[in-house]
Image 1 (cartoon, rainbow, N blue to C red):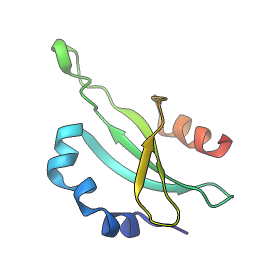
Image 2 (cartoon, rainbow, N blue to C red):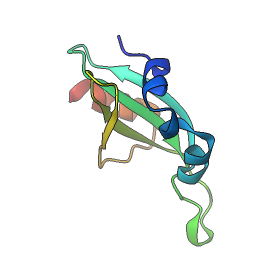
Image 3 (spheres, rainbow, N blue to C red):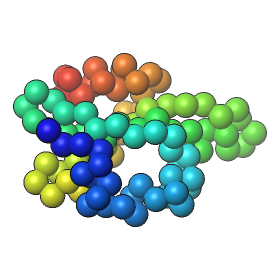
Image 4 (cartoon, rainbow, N blue to C red):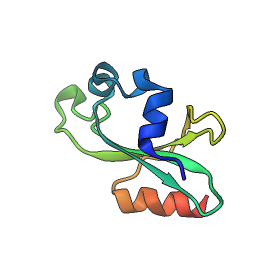
Length: 92
């Protein structure tokens, strides 16, 4: 089972305060499918307040390489709730 602490240890800059502030990230979780494929789930404001819009939380999923624990490709989908993102992970 891959943990968030393990992924942070491999890529500390990815989770730095500077990076978190730049992207508007709020919180991170590592979730794994039953097949063992790990994903990084994050809640984020992701620039939602641009052009005078109110800040809005959304959820993003990013692949994690199971062998190296490196954060990989960002999934294109943007999820409104954490449960929607978790459902996507279960299906893929």
